[in-house]
Image 1 (tube, one colour):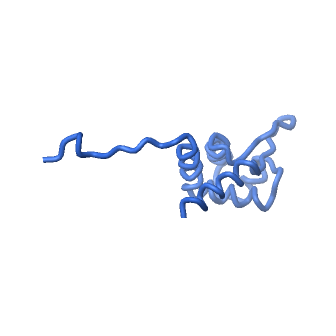
Image 2 (tube, rainbow, N blue to C red):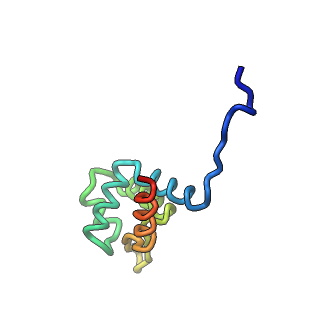
Image 3 (cartoon, one colour):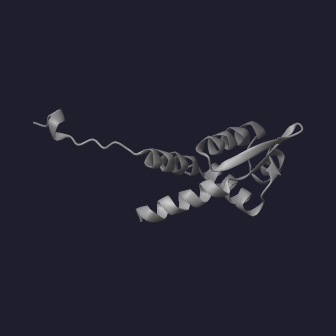
Length: 102
């Protein structure tokens, strides 16, 4: 019989939680496509992304929100639109963390 005493639990560090959130954000194919697009086309607005993905504008906006909340992308408001780009510092940090895992 297994008791709760026999089950190990692990607490994630703040860095592990952050990298997990980023991995989860990139775990969806549409978000990976958006991330790749932004790496090739920095400083673009939602409409630019909608033009290259087979998704509705509202769906793209939701995926952008997840990527923004993970810290991988940044958005600045320019008039009625938001201009998106990769957050270089966060992407560099993420690459270092993933590299350390492997």
